[in-house]
Image (cartoon, rainbow, N blue to C red; front, side, top):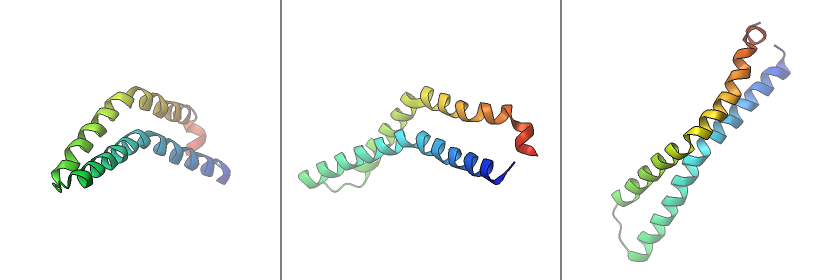
Length: 89
């Protein structure tokens, strides 16, 4: 493997990692923002109020996006394993 191939493989691995993490991170960020706005408007400063909705929404987004995440991951891994003999050298 040349340096260019290694850089291409590393870049693709980072892009796939970001794509797979994005649905959970974005849903957690959005619900956290909404809950913090609700807390500031109502002046309720309960710390557990932020964690329970975030956990629920992140778990729900994980379940909803699991088929897409599996296809994306397989799209990265299958060609890598198919060309394993050139990667190992």
